Structure formats: structure tokens, C-alpha cells
Length: 157
Image 1 (cartoon, one colour):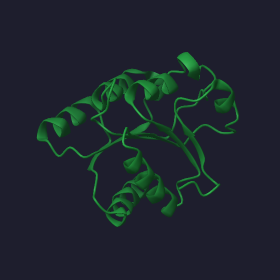
Image 2: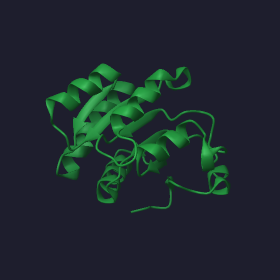
Image 3: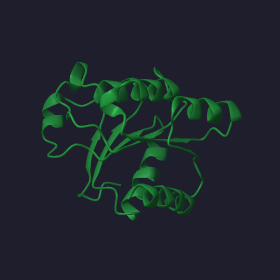
């Protein structure tokens, strides 16, 4: 689904590949479901927001990228503008990723949007408690996803 204009890095990647990125990512997409990630990327492209996306397939990879650890010591120092965060992931779940993002002053201005299949009240309440900027239940159609992301993008433009 890569149109050639997206600076997309699927984590994990080698440090040399990360150095090739010219600008810090605007969007960090954290999702362990490849089909869900591709749907989100397509929606972002449709909205004109797909030029600079980094994709992490679990919370551990995302935290390593955000905090420039392990194989990501050469990742851009500037944090992404927006993190789209799934909750139910292997290794480190989305709530722990959100907690660590909010605990770090360098990431304080990063918008975090929980984008998950969970509509459980406990997940919504915990995400709000941890400081999410928005909570979206993943829709089944790309049209609905585009509408949801468009509303969010207009709030932060």
C-alpha cells in the first residue's frame, strides 16, 4: 500500500535505515495487526497525512523507538506529533506505552490517540486516566476511519 511518497519504517529496522529519514516522523502508528495498520495508513494517505509515518508492531518496539534504545539509538531525537496507539498488543500493551509517554517531559506535547478494537469501559477509563487525547474504536470501514481521523486532524491543525 506504499505509494512511494511515504517515509515508512516498519520496526524493527537497522540503525542505518533510520538515519536515512530526513525529518522526524509526524505520526507513529503502533499496531500489531498488519491489516489494521495498512487500513490506517491508507486513511492517512487519503487525508494527505501519509507522508511521514513510522510503524511499530508492538509496544516494546514503539518504546525503543521513542526513547532511542537498543537498535534505535539513531532514531530522530524529535518526537512524533501524533501517536496512534493500539491497546491489545504483545510484549508491552498500549496502556503501558501511554503511561511511559506521559511520564516523559520530552514527549509531553505529543498527541496520543488510542485507536483500538476495544470498546470496553475499563479500557476507555484507563486510557483517559493515563492521559490519552482521544479514544477511537476501530471502525470496520475505511470511510468511517477517514471520517474519525479527519475530525481529529481538524482539531489539531
